[in-house]
Amino acid sequence: MEFNANRVDEANAVITATVAKEMIEANLDKVAKQASKTMNIQGFRKGKVPVAVVKQRFAEKLKEDAEADAVRKVLKDGLKLLNIKNEDLIGEPTVTKFDKKEEGSIEIELSVACKPNIDLGDYKSLIPEVKDIDVDIKEIDARLTEIASSSAPLEKIARKRAVKDGDFALIDFEGFVDGVAFEGGKAEKYPLQIGSGSFIPGFEEQIIGMKYDEQKDITVTFPESYQAKNLAGKEAVFKVTLHEIQEKVAPELNDEFAQKMLPGQENVTIDTLRDRVKEQMKAEEKSKYYREELKPAYLETLVERIEFALPNSVVDQEINFA
Image (cartoon, helix red, strand yellow):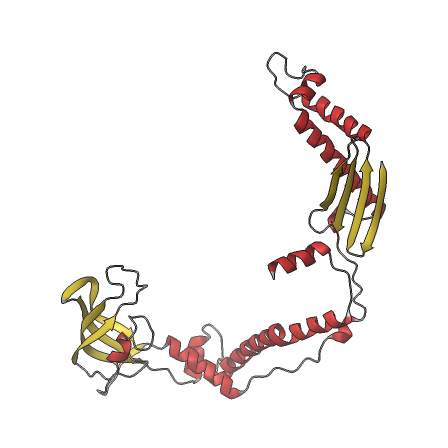
């Protein structure tokens, strides 16, 4: 068998071979003998099928198997010569040429991609200067206020005023299309947060300005994509009654609040909680800084300073996905 194996670069190699007709025939005899031991063919006992019969019945399939064995041997010998281990291969080797000659020989060419050897050198010196991350007291208290507000209970406002954005409006409503009430369009004492976007577009905005015990007709149009097909795209009138207005009253940022947020710990003060939140916020900012600034800058520097061969299969894959 004429054989040649060369590295194109650190990540790519080409193996070529001319497989003689005699080798294909020897492979054919081998696979036919193996098949004769396991095949069930009518008129013969299992394991006693003559090789000649197996060759006659399954000539095309056996020939394909014999040729595949030849390709595997070419690959195995080529990798051994190139000192490339199976675990270093990237993807499956590609058969770039498989030319059957009239005299029965086959010219084979295989393209092999493998892990390149990358010399990073003094890569630590390429790390960009890392800036210090800190969080000021205003940011910390803003986060604590957000936490306090999210966990605050709803309370009925003591003064009677009109509904504004962000309020929780306790309402009764019933919806009608062409004057007929529709299923699922009615509720009593429903707590709707104005500005949440949880209702049909335009509904919440029309609640703004309503006062205690006020009744109002609100007209909206269901979106064309509305899940209830019988209502999609249709205009509806909702009869609404406002019972009361509720709002979240956040607790003061004091030691009592801190003790509720850190139960089971001794000698907790608001400063203890601030320190805990500060460390959490610093960790978040560091993670964001690393992910969005430091890492991209470092990778860009590595790409500029370090050169190495890329497997052609990987390059082709990226081009196809682009």
